[in-house]
Amino acid sequence: MNRYLSAFRIAAIGGALIGALVGLRQWSWVWPGLALEAAARPIAIGWLAGVVVSPALARALPRRTAEEAKALPARWRRAASLLVTVLALAPVAFWPSLARPSAPLRGAAQPTGPQGDTRPNLILITVEALRTDHVGVYGSDLGVTPSLDAFAEEATQYQSAHASAPWTLPSFGVMFTSRLPSECGLRTGDANLTNWYLDEAVLSDDVRVVAEQLRDARYATAAEVTNPFLAGERGWRRGFEYFRNEDGADVGSLETNARTVTQHALSWVRLNRRQPFFLWVHYLDPHAPYESPDVPPELASQKMPEWRLDRAYWYGRVEYASEAEQSRFQEFCRLMYAEEVRFADRWVGELLAGLRQAGLWERSLIVITSDHGEEFWDHDGFEHGHTMYEELLSVPLLVKWPNGVEADPRVTQDVGLIDLAPTFLEFADAPPMDDMRGQPLERRDGSSDREFYCEGNLYYDQQTALITRDYKVIYHPYSLWRALDYEVYDRRQDPAELDNQAALPEIAELRDRLTEQTRQAHTIASQWKVTGQRRFQLDESVRRRLESLGYVEN
Image 1 (cartoon, helix red, strand yellow):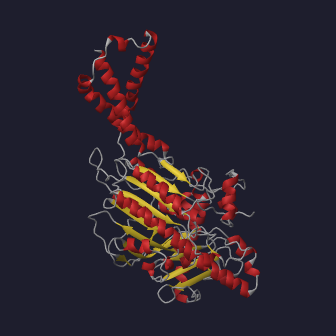
Image 2 (cartoon, rainbow, N blue to C red):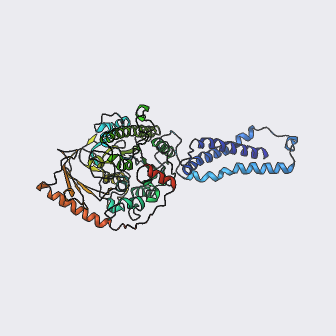
Image 3 (cartoon, helix red, strand yellow):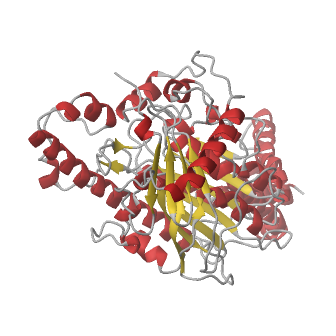
């Protein structure tokens, strides 16, 4: 009997240790809760395997002589026996992990799930402030997006995709709710939005977001993002089982870049559950200040010691400098921005390669886009959040569909980021959310007369815009200069938006329509009150991060 007990203890402890070694291959300090769950199952399996082989081990063990058995005093023998027995039985605590869906080992293919759930994984990759004209497949000859260009060969390229707002916070509100900023709590009726956005604006608790809908549809949900405005305290954590904002209150790092985001996202992917998942990965690169870790030394050496490559520096100093200094600053910013795009593209490529390696490619719907573009003095403005011009509202949109879904390589009709949530819900077989304004993305090229309303600029007085098939109308409802009340551009003949056609009589109906939409949105937005009090107590690291991005004055 003692021999069988010894064999049980040896085999149980040995099996659990082997299982622990296997489980540790899953470990991630970034996602410790999920890593612990993934590591527990191999320990439980190893323990059970040890128990199964213990009878055979007992027959192989040599019998101990009476002298060997009495080598230790009886009291010590009993204590040692009790301790070893407790250790042998301890892995029983990991049994509950066998009843839960488990993560595959690193590099293993994605299983179909315990109930044979074959719905696709949904992956949203967003690159902050990415100009459409810097992406190769959209006509750029800069050569800074080889990863996106290669991805586009397997994806549908949307030639005319629009953000609904010219900066991060309201734009993501539209993406995640399929509602306008004024309808989801991310625009108020106040004439000047800047301080309200910085200090008070949050995604309304009364409006459901797509992550909540997907979680309720039995999708695992995770977000690996970086931007102080995407902090969980502003509502972005809702619906995500695992949420990590590298630049929010979660971590508060000032050294985050695309490399960190990719590594942490792939860490979660390797620990994914058996059921389908929704993963959101957001890269802050190439947001100003443009400081790519990979910038060539010969370009970095051109930076003047006193230069700061952000919004506040331009509008506070260089805007009033000599023409020669302005020209040098502008050209250097353009070059450095391109290097930021190159750096972000490199790590997006690493993320895509990791998805392939994990066996997730064929069964995944992968969307790559941006929340807005970037201004480089196209209309005398710099960075973003100021205007409603095309350099900000036009965004790249590439969608790789799950295996077996038919789609054209290019779609030319107008679509919007407001269509992303309906698309995800359609592929998840999840019910739609209330009052969605978008529709699932078109997969076939054709024609459309859809219109897109845009609002929620960060700086100066409020502006709104209406994008139709033929025209773009920009409205300044609080303008002090009557001539700037409206701007109208012919999208076919004047894509750069340089020739204002607002005075044409035939445009009057469009102007009136935008005015009415603006009035209605203003009424809705007025429910989000301006208190004038700071809602967020930013810790020092986050405040310094906002300062480095040019949002808050030093």
